[in-house]
Image (cartoon, rainbow, N blue to C red; front, side, top):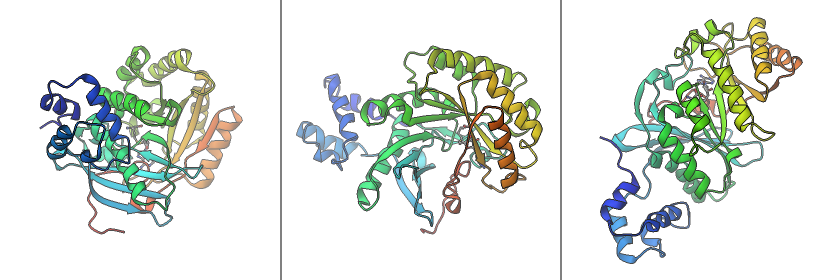
Length: 350
Ligand code: SAH
């Protein structure tokens, strides 16, 4: 069974309504003063009642909320259509505001060896309403917790799933977020394993909004990447290099760079050979930032690189002129960190 969008159901229920009416309703859904349809005084009264009776106000249902001991990370397990569970994370960023990490699919087909979601396989892609409502969910959560900072300043598509394997829904989500929230394109990041046909489509799709893109590179050495990211085909790195050049020529500027994510796996992709190949690869491309992610344990054969090895790796990159940062691990105590999201339901509330 597929999720039927709010728009489709709206048009079915109110076939004679002018187009702007649905847009008005959507706009209302991003106005957090409204807690249900009945409160939407700018909508005709009888329509409000029908919406209240036949439409859920939010397409994701709270199953469990956990917070990390440090109180800087919250993870929500949410139920979507069909009773499936997804996870979304709210984390405090450097400015003390919040970054929301959304899921784009239930599970993932990409099967990266070091990722918990990858172990689930793909269960389903989320509808645009279900992705947007993860953000709305956190807005209402913050409203209910007035002692917390209220502002969500960033959204990252780094939860469960491969966003570019759900291209149309992610594109619609991005366009709606840009239209109805106060977030600009530099505040939203889509992270991808590198689905080449979709990346190429982005180059020429006038409806794709140019939010930030992060590519999960994880190795600039073809055989090592293939070992950890099974979707790596033979000329992947060449194709990425070619694509990145074109992307940066078209869309790159001072504010718009490309990010390469790089999970640090001890003895797997953190040796001097790997840092050299990564530095060479990045320098060939140009306007790229590298973000090193310490591996978060998910019970596989991998171990995180030692602090010393990460330091050496970073220094080698810096020495070659690469702009490199290290991602802070957040929410590991509630399995909310990168790669730890899955749909196991936890019984105990923290
Ligand atoms: N499918 C998207 C989003 C994945 S989650 C992608 O591949 O980019 C965001 C980042 O976390 C990706 O770079 C992903 O490779 C990384 N990641 C996955 N498992 C991880 C783990 N166990 N520890 C650290 N990072 C991990």
